Amino acid sequence: MNKSELIRTVENAQDGSKKAFEALYGEYYDKLYFFVLKNVGRKDVAEDITQESFLKAMEGIHTLENPENFGTWLHSIAFHKCKDIFRKEKRSAYFDSDEEMEAVMENVSLNEPVMVPEDYATNKERAKELKQLIDELKPDMKSAVILYYYDNMSVADVAKTLGMNENSAKQKLFQARKKLKAKIEKMAGSGAVMCAVPMGDMLKNTVSPKYVAAVRTSSSAAVTSAAMGTKIAAAAAAAVMAVGIPLGLGLMNKNDDAVIGDVLPDESSSYISVAYTNESSTPEKSAPDSSVPDSSISESSRSEGSAPESTNRIILDSSQNDTADSSVSVSDDTTTESRPETVITTQNNDESRPESSSADVSASQTERVEMSVDKMLSMDGAQLRALSNDQYDIVLGKSGQAASFGLKCAAFPEYVFLLQRVEGMDNKPENTIKVTYGDFDYELSDKIEELNLYEGADVGGGITVGMTYNEIEEILGHDIYMSATFSVLPNAAWTEIDGKYWALSFDLTDEQLDELQKRLDASTEEGKISIDDPGSVDISDMNPVCNLAVYNIDADNAHYGRLPDGEF
Amino acid sequence: MEILFNTLMRLLLQQMQEESALTEEEKMKNMKELEKILVTEGHFDEQE
Image (tube, rainbow over all chains, first blue to last red; front, side, top):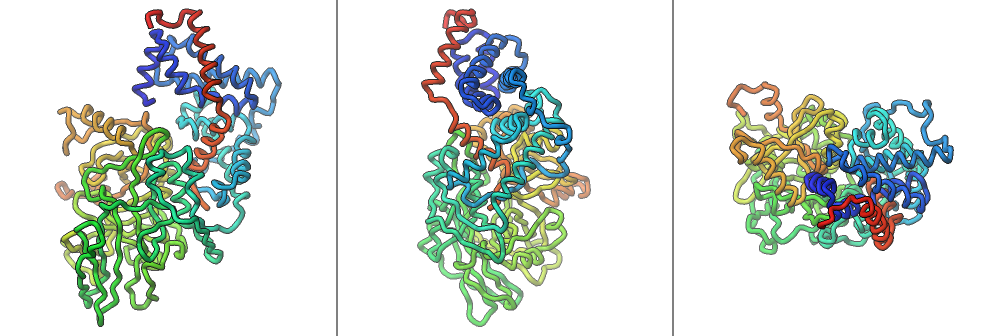
């Protein structure tokens, strides 16, 4: 039920509609029962409290001034009933002692990465152990965890439900996270093992059947990299995909037709070819590969006697060729489409470095390098490529209207950086990267013009890509609003984060996109979005996941008034 | 392997919820019991 549906249903219930009561019961019963059961621990008591809570809520529903708060209100009724039980049973261990309530917020988020045992999704015993860690939390912490992570409540709503101030609620969540993380990572042990997690167990019950049908996996291979201790993106991809946020990094076999833990491109995928060049090399194009479905293809060939060229192919999903972005996200009961971006690693063109076959090189053989926005912006393309041992792929940029190209380095794949095209530069640099896309050739310099950050990347200010809309608002301490962007990204929330101006994009279903479009139009003066009036809309009721953060240097300069008028 | 804490919590909690959920029959029975009480108390519009 979205926010407007909830308001309507509650109002109908306030008017005495039995159907509305049944709808509210159906919407909230499972969540409420789970929340109560985890507090009181006994099925019969949990059933009684859930019934009493619904009854009390319905008896008092006419007093609810803000219908959108029904869920929070219902949970708070239930929580007080749980506390009555604790008082009767004299459970003094309900609250943490003052000593335990130290502020541990520091500068960490509630959603940073955590190491888990690699078989946590497939080994039932292991999964049981992990769940037990949550059960072992004290009730106030456990309640906060359930309300925040499972019911997707904001910290403010968690605080209201539990009858505490926001700071206390935040402390409970951070404390719970700290305890859980420590115990989980102890279970994971030291050293990382790369694995492509079999999708079945993880996808079951969390992703729509349509999405599951689109995923093909090869046999789950476990590859150890004991020396490096690196993490394979496919494992992270599997975890991310399990909650419906597709992320494409996988291993291509020599036939370029299989991936591990990733989604195969459909037949409408396009290809681009890339050649590295310095002034002495002149790459030649071969005839288009007739086996590739899309007509806008060119494949550079190796020319004898010149600097070795690499042939890099990037398989794009067809939506990336459209200005209208049709990305959708998976939620519990909506159908989804994935947005795969399957890449193969590139071949290094530097004669001083060892050659490797693009079919054999995998992201797993590149040591991970810690990256941050500030670090990335302090370097140029060549330095960043070197950090990744020249293991990278060319990808399309996600903003702007003209074609833009970036590098996705194996050592830090969440941090894609776009490079300025040479055309229009006063002094053409010596070393460039030539890209052929469709019918056109482009040359890229080493100058970074934009960052595209993906799932797991640290944007700064406590924000990580992968957080929800409401989490981001919570951390920023203010609302954020969606606007139309008139670029490859159809809409985004523009906001300052850590002194920089970012565009945040979110995973939305088709229905949500339609709804957003309607709201954007309605928010404009003319009733229709335009360049001058792109609209401004709050979508905290949808609470989608942020799947991309874009930082454009020119846009940043324009925002902070550092560009003369008319130059952006 | 490394995943986001948020992702892990959602996965685990969702599984825990599904494992402990009442059956549809049990839920329906409870709903009907509640409706009886609410009808007696006059909370519903008689025309519906």
